[in-house]
Amino acid sequence: MSVPKPGFVVWPGLLAGVMATFVGLGLARFAYTPLIPLLVQAGWFSEARAVYLGEAILLGYLLGALFAYRLTQWVQPRVVVGVCLAAIVLSFVLCSWACGFAWFFAWRLIAGFAGATLIVVVPVDGGASDSHRTPCLGG
Image 1 (tube, rainbow, N blue to C red):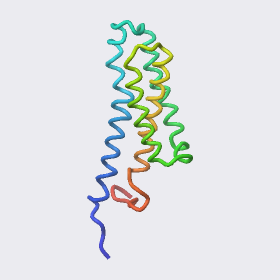
Image 2: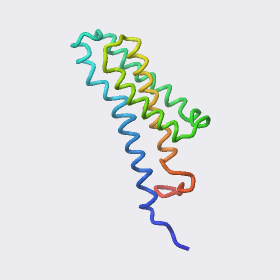
Image 3: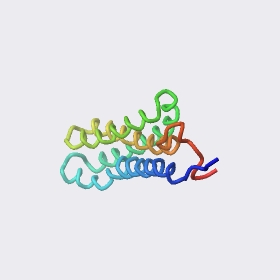
Image 4: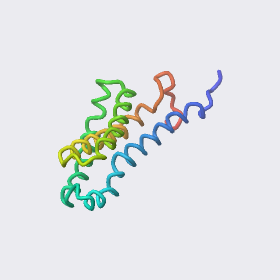
């Protein structure tokens, strides 16, 4: 009986986790923060409204973290991950025009929800199919 080499099983899950962290935390959540002064300088929003948009991301994160597991019970995890990645990209594209506070708030909320969902779903799913789920990184 031969034992499979862990390198073949570890890398897809590890890469999926790294990318989910980069997109979910780095882009969906923290990429907005450096834009706040620019949005205020451009006259798109007042300082107070720009801060509320940052809070929309945090609210989305809270909701995403709370409902991510339940969402994967209704929809396959890979579909959830794909929709979340698309929602994050779409939120950046649709927030590149001055469309008003409600528009930005909704898309920042969606980006936060999608980012937190990625952070919760990808480590559980691991980016592997059920046939490759072997304990290779821990107990």
